[in-house]
Structures are given as structure tokens and as C-alpha cells.
Image (tube, rainbow, N blue to C red):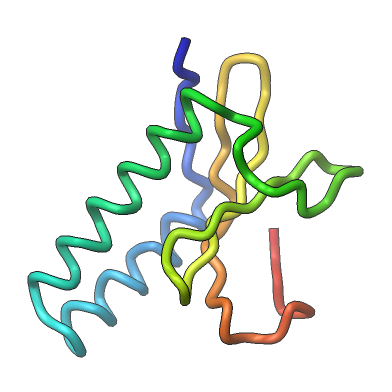
Length: 98
């Protein structure tokens, strides 16, 4: 059974930043493709919560590569998937914030 999806404020803000950047720099088609990809990945994660790579085992934080430039981080509970953040993979790994 699919779990409920919860977006944190940080994740939602970052998603909106990426969407705005794509609209301004790459146009409507690229933006639409990205949004479709996000929805597809989130739906996949809700059906298969353990599909992501375990990034921080002590906090049960997982990551999933959305695009070559964006990685989505999430945590699971019995009933929910909590989307924690989107991360630009071109940034240093020390800048990851969950």
C-alpha cells in the first residue's frame, strides 16, 4: 500500500527554486519534464519506500537521484514518506542538509 507523502518546508522551497530556475533558463518543456519526473519518483518511493540509497543509516535517511543534477532525500515511517530536501549534486557533499 502506498504511503502518504509529506513535504517539509525546506523540500518544498527547494523544489520551487528548481522549478523557477528551469522555467527561466530552460523553458516550459524542460520544466514540465522535471515536474513529471518528480511526481513519478515520489509515487515510486511511496510504493517502494526502501528503493532509495541509505544515506544516513542512523536517521534512516534515504536518497534517490531525480536527475543528474538533483537528488531527493526522504525518511519513512509506517504510514508516511517525508520528503526532506532536494540537493544539487554539483555542490559539495558537505552542504547536504536534511
